[in-house]
Length: 124
Length: 160
Length: 279
Image (cartoon, rainbow over all chains, first blue to last red; front, top):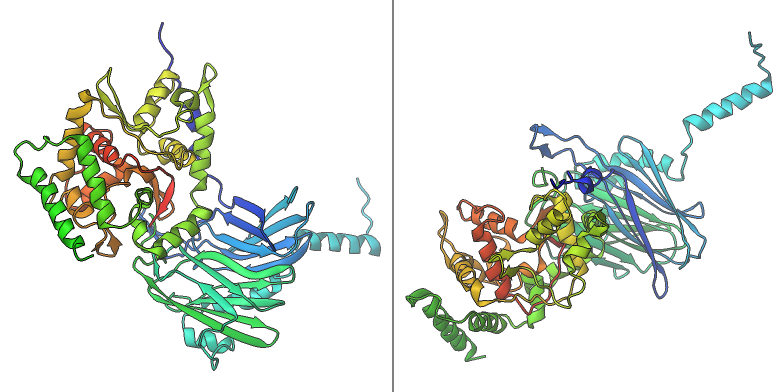
């Protein structure tokens, strides 16, 4: 009986490039505050890199501003630039956080497109 | 055929609907965003400090700022930096990398309920000073560290 | 302290007289060889054996801190998460890579190993492909970061802290000795061997990098260079060969498998990690 070799069902879904602007966010309780860490998948192109495949300059593409709000009150806002590393990471510290609080992270890229992320804190 | 009537009330309703559709994402910082954007385009560090009212300041390291940076950056495209201030209340951190094409790298504004602390990763073009100015009330304090960079991080050396 | 340099000189010359001047390069037992080389490094760099997992980072607190900072929330976490999904996914007959590899059951990490029946070196990549074949699935390329790379990074990071143990049955001695020869063989336009940098000159600067010691190097692979480029240990061997101006061996070739086998054997006893950041 001929054995059927599966083509690669595992690969089909996984091989595609993961979406830009995905965010990973972690909150953890520390002694006197709460750690808020997040990483946004974004190329943060400086506009100076040459794509080796087609020998062209890759245009600027970066997150220009980012804000964090807790229960719809902005607690942190920032302006970023192409000098921030690829896949921008931020570690912030929140003084008070309670179960049920809603953390929102919004960011705007250099083309003025807005992205939003929301997370409800369950247990902390 | 549908009859179209436009009363004052329905006109105002439509207008507000269009407004909220076109401008749904008003946030606290969207106005400031337009204002401050121009400073990120500056290439001259002295002019930048001047226009942001940072020149004529004592450029020694203020004891209220704890600026943690590597001595020698392993890779200029991903330099971990940590800024912590011991100042209470609302404040803004301005972070500059003196030899980047545009020296202003980022601005962080902390409202209440936030510890004035940020740890992030920056790109540094070459060995330079990393300046942090903190504005709070009408005061400004400063700290800076030298960072040596062997592999520049602003574009030419990144993965292609 | 006074006699340390004298002791080092004596150890070095004894060590290399065997390697360079003996007609039969393989007269020393592999276990004695491993003990000698580990003692050599333990005396040269005064760090405990476990710390050699961090390879070149042990020389600089600055580098170690940057590493820790990035490993706190690595940008390449996606690959490890993808690897986790692929590792546990049921492929065929309700079986997955996890049920075939059975790595979690062992308290030590035992790859690469020598298959005495088939008389072959089985690296972890090879074992993954053997398991995929058993599960009626197409093999993966050894250097594909989205499949093999992700699973490799996941497995090594999941089993972080386990001790690397490489068994050496008598039938594998030839492979071990060939690997050892490759390690000491001068190659390329620059006429350098692995030992030239990583044995004789570990801790010294080569351009702006501090040369890492031999033992512990395979333990922490695979790595993500610049926090995004995947490299397995064999891909790194290829890079090294290119940088000394030599034509690199193919991945999964007899030569690179023998080199990895030898390299891992002399690094046994040191814990493992994987899916880590490097500059």
